[in-house]
Each structure stands twice: as C-alpha cells, then as structure tokens.
Length: 217
Image: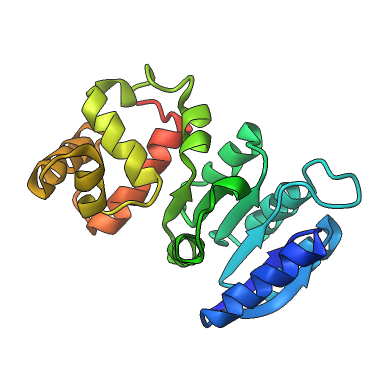
C-alpha cells in the first residue's frame, strides 16, 4: 500500500516511516511542509495520506489545507489526520464530500502500533477512524438535526463507536450488549437515516458521515 506521510518533526516522521514499512506499507514520500505535501499527493497519488495539521511554513493548518486541495483534485483520496489539535472546520470539510476514507487521530491518544496501523488500513479502504474527542466536538451542535434527531441515545452511542471504526463485536463489548442487540441497533440506525439496503460496510460509512456532518433531512 502506497503512503504519503507529512510530519515536520524529524524523529517522529522517521519513526512513522519505520513503523509503516515494518507493516508492509510503501512510503512513496515523507515530507515536512505543506507545499511539499501537496506536490507529493498530486504527483504520487497514494492509496492513503497520513498528515499532520500544523506544518511549515506557518505552522497553522498547512497539512489539512494541502489535504483538502489534493482531495478536490483526487476525489476520494483517503486521508488520515494525525495531530495534537482538533480543527473542527477542516475536519468537517474532509468529511463533507461523503466519500469516506477519512480519519482523525490525536497523537497523544494513539497508544500502540496496532491501533495506528489498523486506522491507516481502515481509512485506505474507505472507512473512518475518528478519535472520540474529535467526534464529541463535531457532534456538539448536531444532536437535534434531522434525521439525526430520530436516533435514540443508545443508537447515537452505537453510531459514535462506529465512527471510531469499531466492529459490532467491539461495540457489544464496550456497551455490555450482545452482538445481536448491536446488530438491531445498527439496522434501526440505517432505517432512521434513510439509508437504502446495500453493502453493510458502505452503509456504516454513510451513517457515520451523516452523524459527523449533522446531515439534515
């Protein structure tokens, strides 16, 4: 799997390169600035980009801006943001096209290599991998929006864990429910969000995008 990586801190960038290569990824570019990132994304067209938010030259939002520009030129380009900060506006912009392939992890909440590698693979496959803090901030003003307002508190809880990329089995364990109960909740979520019958993985992504974007009916 071909990866473009953007991180301004050399030791962290080198560590991420070594980690991903050890798990079979091909790092086609590892850059440290916003302009370098944009060029690498457009030139290399990777299968996934792992991007810090704040890069040189101004250390504000160059990483996300470059990712957004590249995603407009390469629709559906999978982007995993790895940052110390939650930038709500740009996170929403990444989610806005409704194609999936988006993750947003906070650096100090990535606890092991397996968690990180799983997130990279999930995003590359078109799924989502969102940190709970990012989800909470995105959802702060969305709870009353239709059709999200139709969801019960338990259904919103299940959908939030789906946004983190958790399977039904993992959700069941987290909420002390049976897998069949979780399956019933997910079926109800799909129905209340008016998601037509299709591949369940696709409907999970669409439900998560509706949830995080506050889609209105």
